[in-house]
Amino acid sequence: MRCHTAEHLISQKLDNELRPSLDAKLQKHLQRCPFCTSLYQEYQLLQTGLQQLSNPDFPPQLHHLVMTALPKRNRSTELRKFRLSMAAASLCLVLSITAGTLVGYRGYGDYQNLTENESSTTLFGENSLMVVTYDE
Image 1 (cartoon, rainbow, N blue to C red):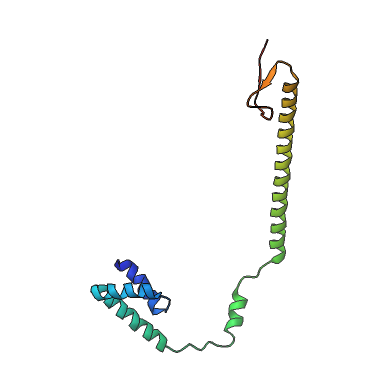
Image 2: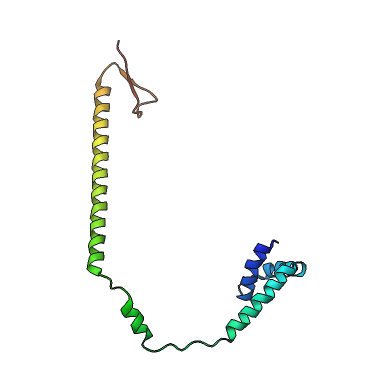
């Protein structure tokens, strides 16, 4: 195991999130690596020190002060932007479907004109759109 991996596992171990199989591998690494052992001890001391700190007491009006300092959201502007973007997306969808239909219809019409010609033949079977015309 590399020290970089062991550092992540040490953090997980101190948070009680390390699986037993990885814990055994970490213990083997800690027995062989003095750097990671000292790092593990430092993290333990830091965690113990943080746990001994008391929770700070905040003034009761702090929530109100923070909420009033936040910028106001203009919901009508947000709704207008959303509706405009939905209208633009709908327009693009309708135009795409219309263009695809026109291209397909025109292509199908050209295919019908070619197959009506007696001197044309289709390649690759009856359902193929590849039509070859030749002069006789």
